[in-house]
Image (tube, rainbow, N blue to C red; front, top):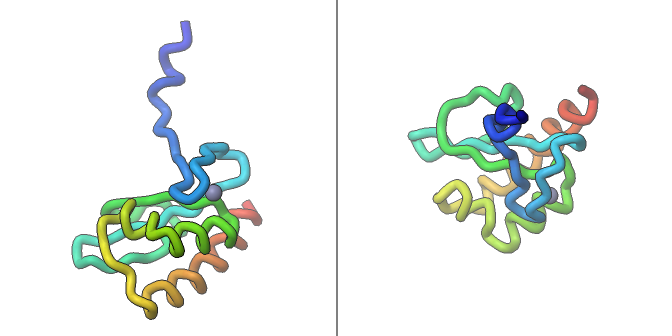
Length: 97
Ligand SMILES: [Zn+2]
């Protein structure tokens, strides 16, 4: 009996739909103030979305508006640039684990 396996929340990359947790996903979170940031701790409150620790997925998610959709917000150019930068930091952190 393996009922416990269904309990685990599945994290799916919003860009490619991959849910392989092995390579590490970076969590984005939108606070209730509407600020979107990379969640390095994985514990920030708010609406979250996951992306592979891969810049290709971030680019794809941004271009196709998937990140906006997942977080239900609009991302400005400034937001995107800021997120790209912190995403790189997050990738390094998550790959270093
Ligand atoms: Zn992905």
